[in-house]
Length: 373
Image (cartoon, rainbow, N blue to C red):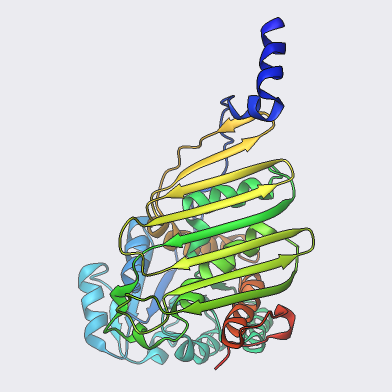
């Protein structure tokens, strides 16, 4: 007792807890496959990102029966790489006409994606849409309503939700392990100059929209029911960047009783780092790594410090998780956690951030309903 009293006097309660190692909570952060449901899947859009979709589906034992792309040779290439028994199509309507295909993964660019999603739903198919889901909230809501009307499931490939570190934090927050979230600060510093010379080089808000939608989405998962009051964002070209779009971006978001910051440095050629810090009324999470896939996570509470040793990686689990959740939802007759409606707050926040960056002024997310031209 005397030694304990001396330690309390020397360190203080918070410092004493910080030195105590506790067991990490056991949380279901890995993707969960359906028990029996293994439908035929059709993939529409066989560009570069489709590699990660198909690799995850093959590893999970899913069956891709059709591959479709307007550049048919790309579909043939993906078939040879991953699913040699799949049929290849150039016309998406031929895929949607197949009665055996129940689920379609639409991995095209946003402008082409919306009519494909609508056509797929009207053809009676469940849909997994690539992110970002839509370019305006009215369209996003209309597609979600159409899925409900048809009794179908419409999910979005917000694969960051199944990145092991974010998934663990997400489940811990949902279980109340750190209380109410009062602060979220996420930053990523990496080299995105690889887009130079590709079609992505023409996307003006490549960082704040196409890339950062993962961060806006996971922030809305972490922050819960709180609604953002205002967002202030900025973007700029880096002095040394090779890509055309501005590679520097940041956003500050105000909530009732909470705050958040997102920081993106996409021209950090050396010493890349990805960092997540979440503070709650009863604890904090800190996750740091050299990139998006290798993370060291720490949970600090009154009881002490836990350092979970997580399995998996973002791309391996992320692309598996989005489809797995859709298939489980179909099997269990419920909405998927990555449903179209679940991503609306992230779209709203992202649109407001882009508008703020364009106008150099704070924006209330409720007042911005679309991605600015």
